[in-house]
Image (tube, rainbow, N blue to C red; front, side):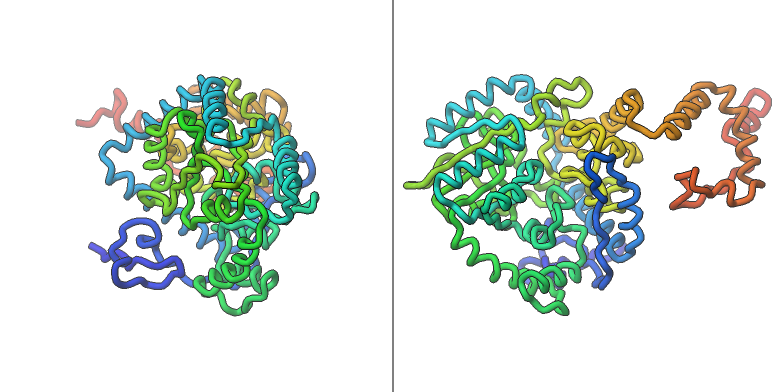
Length: 510
């Protein structure tokens, strides 16, 4: 039996003492070997409303072996830690079902719980705003900031604000936005979107971060020690935080019963953003509503275990009202969620709690990097969410999957992710959102696979062709399957032939 690796600190050094006994989170992380320097591959090329070419961006990511190896190892490490945590809870599957049922109930009574949340939040002294889309959300927040003459806003991690393009909008209106989450701050300084819903800069090597910090905050470009880089970022950002005029957070769960919001972080950055200034603004997607505090306990048990393999986040903060003498504003954002709620095949995607477990297990995401999807939400969950925002622009994404079902198996709220990906493929085909050549090939394959006689008759011919055809005929630009892989060796006989000979009526064996 092999000896497990010693636990490591976040800086990648072997830890001793009390932390060496940790069996989860950073204490159970496998040390990533020092890699680089290697130029960081960039994400998908955005060309207006033209369909995202995820395959092209993925190809560039896979052509960077250091980044590919690190990304794949780190995310698989998170998946394994999630499994260890899951195995320690006997009632894990019951919790998954309960979490799914709570979300189903809430989403099918969403109007009732939103009104209850608004009523109770207002009773707590909170100003509640409603935004039908990203533009309204951004305008509401800017109006709040202008009313207080705020020039600098500190912000904790929020995928909703990324979805709304808020940081760019604020910059255009003279508001400086400072990200307080380390990963988000790295991405902000590098002018990149987050590549993962939980670990925004997971696609970067230490040397990438060293280069970004050297360029933007003046650190040593040759020092990629994680502790050094973290300290440099903290020293540079803390004065900006202390001198901020307003703070902004996202929301993991909004509790209708109390009118309060729950934000889960591992760095305490939500607490910094909410409490450093006298003005706290919260951006909340309407699907984040849950009925009661007891329900929050279920999701808190599931969230960090699914995301990072830790029993709970370091900080689980409940914000119920403004600080004494301060103000608290909550912006409830629709931005297409009501439309998605009416989609028979896809409404359950609104159950998502943004844990990223589906990304950590997905073989395509792990090997192509989150930025290759060219969208706010990457990975399996992104494949079913993104087309609801723009079906044409994200028409290629549902095909960036093997449909192996691992994403569905790890989802803490039991979203049937791989089935919805397959449903989106059907929608794209029916609405002529796939290339004519691919559609013709899929139609031909469908006819072949629908006829057992035709399928069995074609196999020997196909096998003979693969054995004897020149390589350039099989490996060409038209056959996208062979661009990044070798065809498997052709078997001497098909399974049907083997079965007929060995197990059929004329070849029965005892």
